[in-house]
Length: 438
Image (cartoon, rainbow, N blue to C red; front, side, top):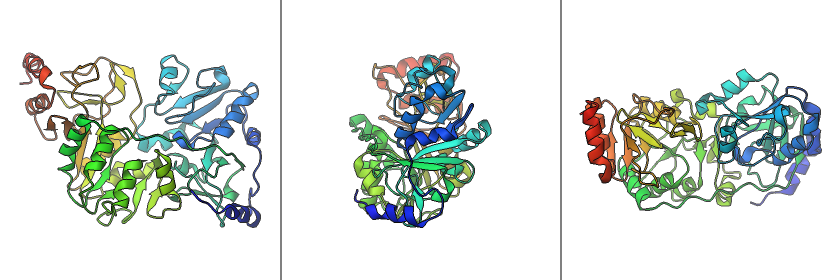
């Protein structure tokens, strides 16, 4: 992206407050025994600041780092500094998953919409360390790709920022003035690119079943991955769609540039594409830079089921790992072992259920990579229920759509078996009969 380098210079010399950058090490002046650090998820993490904190770990005592979905591997995550610096996760990533399994990090199960409230309740005088765009001519930083829970701490916590020219300046409710920070530094670190996963035939089959049920003018929430990418591609012939989603990804760029998404039918934030964080490729980050059609809002607004329910024809699309005959969805554990956490799945499923004309889709392949059925009579011992049976609306595999909302247990079981892989249907039927479900 091309930025005017004089803008930040003008801002640094014309506004009151902390108007000069300092060294990343300056963050240590604001960290004492027992300090609670708040770090944004994914690319919102200020890597040079975190490097500086770890480099002085011998000076730390009882520091806790609160964060969702870390994408940078670090010594403190591996437990190298013991209790001097410990990670508290609210959503496990490919980095933190193994460290949680060995007891090196803690996990707080939480709906994404409630993470800010939980962090605020668990911390006292927290220090927020976050990545940001350079200040504009008015002296405002943007939190760029991560509004999430972090932006809700503006005016409620201390901020130390790491500015990089690679961070897009985004709009919404994620700006913070130079007078509101205790310090800021510069770095040249690039954002991490996450290339979109390419859909296969199964993903495209699922996308076809979902897209044909989405009306023109609907407002959509979807995530990242092969199935969501296939669904967004399948929506290219729709009209006047809106976006209100936690995650902004590359697929959304295609829909906006094609004119499919314009938000003119939305009830909330009309004409605006709304998210709470962005994760994707350089194309996405360049698209977001100074794009007034896109707004990043705090997750406690974006994911609030009460807000979501105010949108007519709201469509929620989320993936799961397994579904039992009752319709319970285990989306955060595999065979009783934690894999991620609750995230925003239940937030949007509940919001869609209360929306006038709303629909909630749970999508999954009918089998695992090893051929085991993902439609199961009962969830595995220890599996956490991410989306409750009373909330689940429609479950979609490559074999069709199982409608569950308002259905009896017999009807649910029959509908789910009908979308299971054919190789497992007879066994599932026998088990369902033994359980007296059919």
